[in-house]
Image 1: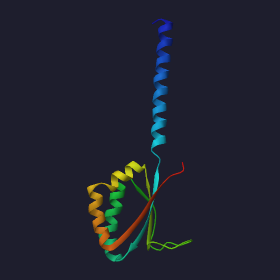
Image 2: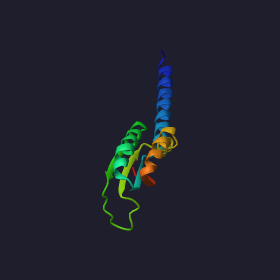
Image 3: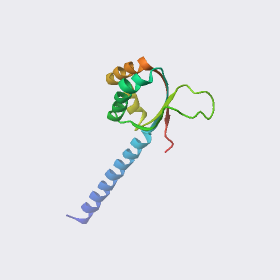
Image 4: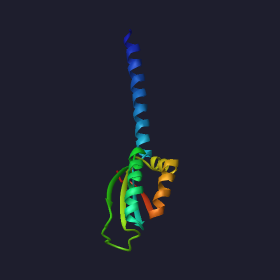
Length: 128
């Protein structure tokens, strides 16, 4: 192979690799991780823990989320608590979280939870 052809192929490969890297960086920039903070007002703790919590936790994990903190006795440091239980979940992106929330499986599990509790949740993008 002639040296000009080799150089042309090397330049072409470098451009292709650079383009792929730029696309990868754009995809990362578009999909920030999110934290979901839920304040839950539990009315029936025994049934909540028996009938709802294990199903909800399993579905979160199956759907790509991760529970990073949970408490049945959170410490209020300012303002008024909206619930007796707090959870913090980590999700790969808002898109993944919305997909989880709109799933039939979520709606079925949440219907069980609503028998025993009221839910308030906020989603915030991670800083990184």
